[in-house]
Length: 129
Image (cartoon, rainbow, N blue to C red; front, side):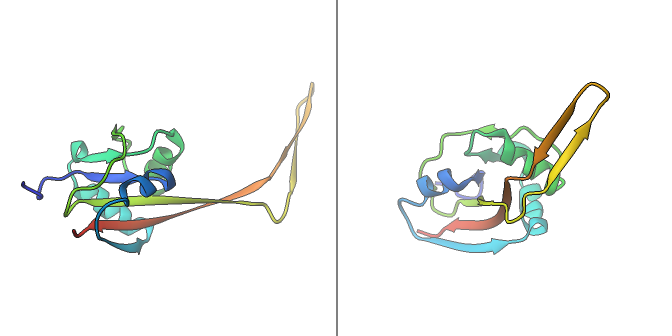
């Protein structure tokens, strides 16, 4: 089997647990700049997303400053030997402060309240065996 043309998988918390079921893996943390460089090193059709929500795709495009390529979705399964992936791990915590923003128009007064903090970090995964 030719492993040089395996697609790069983009994973979230849930799909990460699906692909790690079988094999030996090497994992390391990435900053956003490193994640961007890896994604851009692949042909657009060789990058597959293994999550269905649009939120993470917007993070990839907006915060990594990657042109929106509309990555093809595939159901997460086990990774092939020598396949690579980037996991976008999401952590949501309650807000320690809850500022209220008042929005006033001539007809209406509304409020917006901060209720949570969202953190995302990247992890590079390579299946060795």
